[in-house]
View 1: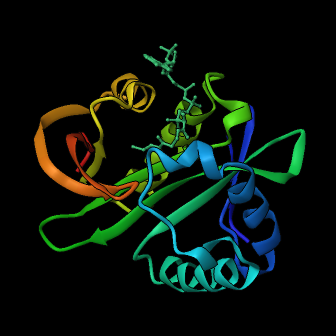
View 2 (view 1 turned 45 degrees about the vertical axis):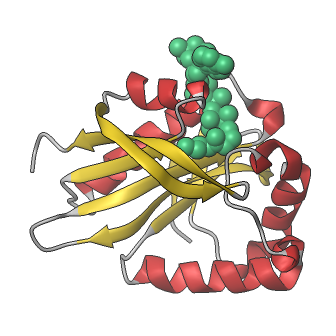
View 3 (view 1 turned 180 degrees about the horizontal axis):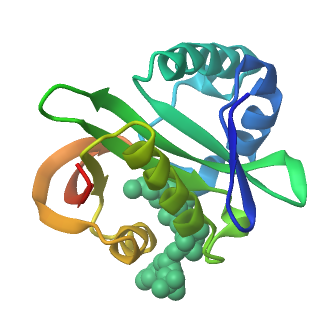
Amino acid sequence: MKEYETRRLVLKVLDSTSAEQVLKYFLRNKSFLKKWEPAKDRNYYTLDYQREMLDKEWKEIQDKCMLRLWIFKKEEPDNVIGSVSFTRIIRGPFLSCYLGYRLDNNEINKGYMTEAVKKGIDIIFREYKLHRVEANIMPENKASLRIVEKLGFHYEGLAVKYLKINRRWEDHMHMVLINPKI
Ligand SMILES: CC(C)(COP(=O)(O)OP(=O)(O)OC[C@H]1O[C@@H](n2cnc3c(N)ncnc32)[C@H](O)[C@@H]1OP(=O)(O)O)[C@@H](O)C(=O)NCCC(=O)NCCS
């Protein structure tokens, strides 16, 4: 299976055989992620659901319609600590995708997500040859805004009531990074 390294992390594409590790991550971080993510179905926290999701994503990743990299610390190779994703890859004259990410509550503020997203962008610009990465972030999510700021994204405006997060339509700041080479 495809994997990449950064200084402190290993970033891996996973298939459904890793559903148990992924489920453990989501169960551990259920309340941490609630504030920032769409509400989850009750069966989200089951092995069957996670297997199905990983299977579906695996196929999309093979077709280069998306990329999700699961994050591991080098010294804990079996413990998922988050993911970074590039979804809805659109080609033609757009060459764009959406960026998303989530970490483990026990690992925040150590620079891990900036490290992972930086590598992800490198892959999506060089290997996938995309022109544009878009991130939509709630104004109060200061840590997330800081990540894209550190990586050079620019602000394109406020998307009003853009996404339903934790059962409420929330405004999002539209943050964009352009590939200088394409
Ligand atoms: C957002 C998230 C991925 C951050 O991961 P992380 O590994 O802690 O991020 P990093 O350490 O790489 O960078 C975070 C930066 O935000 C800063 N920060 C953290 N909390 C902050 C706050 N409340 N106000 C201002 N800055 C803050 C950190 O100091 C750091 O900046 P610095 O390097 O200049 O000191 C993590 O908190 C998370 O998974 N949150 C829940 C899911 C989520 O919000 N996903 C994104 C949706 S858009």
